[in-house]
Structures are given as C-alpha cells and as structure tokens.
Image 1: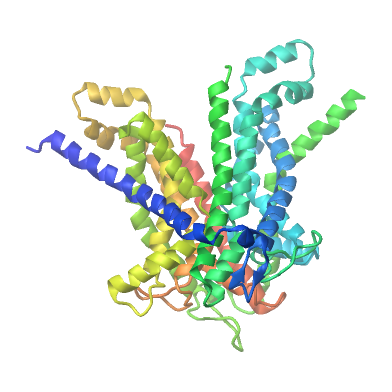
Image 2 (image 1 turned 135 degrees about the vertical axis):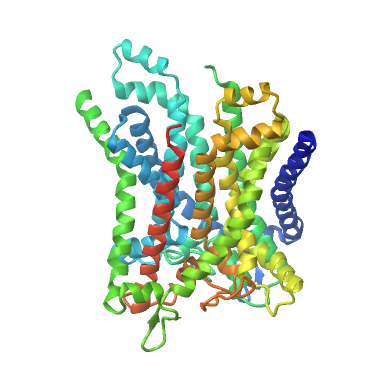
Amino acid sequence: MRNPYRTQKIAFSLLFLATLLIVVPVGLIVIVIIFKGFPAINWQFLSDIPRQGMRSGGIFPAIIGTLYLVAGAIIFALPIGLLAAIYLSEYSKENVLNRIIRLAIINLSGVPSVVYGLFGLALFVVFFKFGASILAGSLTLGIMILPVIITTSREALESVPDSFREVSLSLGVSKWQTIRHIVLPNAIPGILTGTILGLGRAAGETAPILFTVAAFYLPRLPKSIFDQAMALPYHLYVISTQVPNVDEKIRYGTALVLLALVLFMNLVAIIIRYQFRRRKKW
Amino acid sequence: MRKVKEFIIEKLILICGLASIFFVGLIFLFLLKEGLSVFNIVTPLDFLFGKSWYPISDPAQLGILPLILGSLLVTLGAAVISIPIGIGCAIYIAEIAPARIKEVLKAGIELLAAIPSVVLGFIGMITLVPFVKNCFHLPTGLTALSGSIMLAFMAMPTIVSIAEDALYSVPKTYKEGALALGATHWQTIWRVMLPAASSGLLAAIMLGIGRVIGETMAVMMITGNAAVMPNTILEPIRTLTATIAAEMGEAVVGSEHYFALFAIGIVLFIISFAINVTADLFLHRKQ
C-alpha cells in the first residue's frame, strides 16, 4: 500500500522544482544583464551616436527612434482601442457580431509578430508608398498592440459597477454623457495600465519593424515621420549577430537599456493597478 | 445639436468596435494579395512539400518542407520542456504557494513575459549556445535544441497564467467535496482539480504552442538558420518565421522570392488562426 502522504510530499516537491526552473533562470537573466550591462552605461553611451561601425560610441539614435515609434503606435492605437473597448463593454449585445469581434481580437493578438512585419510592408510601405519610415513602423506596431489595449480597457470599463450607470441614467443623463462623465473617469487607471503594457510591448518588438522602419546604421536623428530610424531592439539584434567584434560591454549595455525601458513601463503599470485596487471605493 | 453630436460619437464607437475585424481581414487580404502570386511559379503542393529552399538560385526552388519541419521540431522540443514545467508551476501557484509567495511568483512570471524576445535571444546566444555546444561536443551550439529550450521559456508565461486561471475557476465545492471524503490535497489536485480544469489546461498548452510557432527573433538568433531537412535536434535548423525575418530584407519587391516569403506568411497566419480559434473553443466550453 502506497503512503498517500509520501506521494503528496514527492508531488509537491516536484511542483516546487518546476516553479524554481522558471523563476530562477528569469532572475538570473535579469541579474546578469544588469551586472554586465551596468559598467557600459554612462552619459556618453546614452547621448552619443554609434561610432566605428557601431563598435563604440553610444546608442542615442536608437533610443530616440524607439521613443518615436512607441509614441506613434500609441497615438494611433489608443483612440481606436479605447472606443472599441467602449463599444464592447457599453453597447454590444451578446450576439453573433460580438462573438466575431471577440474572435478577431483573439486572432489579432495571436498573429506572429513577423507576420505583422509582412503586413506592414505590404500595406504601408509598398501599397501606401510610405516607404520604410517611422509612420509605417508606428502604424504596424499600433495595430499589433491594439488587442492589448482593447482587452485591458474593456476589463476596466466592465469593472465599473452597473449601479453607477443606472443612477446616472435615471437622472435623465444620456448614454454617452454617462459614459463620458461617469464610466470613463472611474476606469482610467485600468485603461492607463493597458496603455502602458501596450507601450512596453511595442518598445520591445523587433520583427514588425524589421522591414517597415528599422535602419541598420543611421548616425543621425530622424527629421520627419517619413524618415527611417534606428530602434533599440533592432540595434541589439544587429550588434549581436550582424556586426563582428563588437565589445561585449556595448551589447550588454544596449540589452540593459532596452530591458530597463520595458521593465520600467511594466512596473509603472503594475503599480498603477495595485494602487487602484487598494483605493477602489466599491 | 447635442443629439447630432451623440449620434456621430456613437457611430464612431461602432466603427472602432468593428476595427479588429477589419484589421484581421486586412492582414489576411494583403498576405493573400502578395503571397498568392507564388503559385504561378510552383503548385501549392510543391510549395508545401518541396524539399529544397533555394529562393535565389536560378530557377528558384521554393519548397518550404524543411522550414515547416524546422518549426515543428523546435516547437515539439519546446512543448516537451514547457508543458510539464508550466503546468507544474501553475498548480504550485494556484494551489500550494502561500499568499505572499504567490504574488511574488506571479510578478516573476509577468516579468518573464515582458522581456523582449531579442533580449532573450541575445542571452541565449551568449550562455545557452556555448553550453549546448560543450555539453554534446558539437561543432556549433546553434541547434534546434538551443532554440527549443529558449522557446520553452517564452511559452511558459502564457501556459502558467492561463492554466492558473483554469485551476482557479474550478468550483470550490469540488475541492471541498474531495477533501471531505478524506482525500489528500495532492489526490484532490490530481484526481479532481486537473480533470475539472482539463479544457482550460488544453487551451493554455495550445496558446503556449501558438506563441512558440510565431516567435521570431530569439529563434533566428540561436537555431543556426540552416534551411535543410532536419535529422536530429542537435543540428542547426531554420523555422518559417526566421526565414521571413532573415530574407525579406534582401528580397526585391515583386520578385518570386518576395511572393514566396508572403506565402510563408499565409501559412503562419492560418496556423495561428486555427490554434487561437480552437483554444478559444476549449476556454469557453460550457462545463
């Protein structure tokens, strides 16, 4: 007769081991990048253009390029995503159309990132003749982060209690005014969380910008939205695989700046969510 | 006046609500528009099952079977690694971990999901690739195995978070009933919770695999990019995604090569569509 308590002990140890197998490498990855990248970070690294075929100098154009791309993506995706979320949470009914929209959102979030790159190339670069440009890259990234923004904003809107809406409507306020003045203000922290998560995703993606905007080496800042630009993730890819003999310090430094940017945004999102949950009045 | 304004706003909201359908359609349409031309040169069967991929030789040989097998091989490897670990971790977080540790673990998983794939690829190149090389005494560590290990990590956040949700949504009464009958906690998990959550767990696995098939940068950086028929997991291979990412930069717009890469995009789109729709069916199956 097997002892069920011993079986339980073994099973739980295995589960704990599985958890360690995920958490420990993650911790190690972050720690290694921080320790090896930190010595490379100084003012010159952050503010100078890449020099000597990207083997020295800084990463300033890549940082600026990524900021432009992320800003462009959010300008495009936030209004559409927010209105879509309002539609799903406030207007749509449980019917076939609603189901199709939900499936479309799921598929949009499942499309491989490189396929977004192809799509951006075909539609924005070739069909609309934007060329490889910040505009084309931003729009591609914008469509890619749309599902993140819609899903989180919708959850935020739906978590506003129905009684708020009912009170407002019963006072004779119109539906849109209720949404605008009652529902939206109460959902702002959740919407902000989703937006920031979307930003972080857009900042870290490489494949969608490969053929839509990314410049291999462009030692100046982009002048307009029709310019190509360097971007941090692509720059990291280039100096780790395409350019031989790059000092390891520069690679780790670039990885650290990118990781810090993305993790910082995620941290902000988590803090906003946490604060919001604590202060929630209902 | 206000009526008109509200009418316009509500129409705008409806249009944006439909935007995701529009964009999915648009993506598929443009992939088809650019990709279908390749079938003037090769038949769909030769394209899918042709054994050689030499897109710039003359005449071009456009068979993507080595790429499909490459994708399948790394995906299979990643699944073997990530499914037991991911589900195990989900059970630990959902059922065993004390409340405070649970929050830390969840944050850790979120952290992993947030790390850009190019950063993981970079770390994999520097640590994992030499490790695999030395471990198996290979001429190169850029192999399908390295890719599988790295991709397993990228699948885990998806698997853990969805599996944990699935376990969490098993009715409390099931668990209490089993415990009241004298079952141990583990017996309850194994015999009651897991079967009850099975459709959610399946969805978690499928979405994790979907993530792996679509992953591009990390896989391009550490699998060696050799577009040949793979024999073992210890050889360089090339995936569908990496092929597009690596070659589109050089392909001339409107060339056979360009069309062929878009056709690979169609294949990827259909695979991800099928996976996501099926996973959604599992997730929303009425208990």
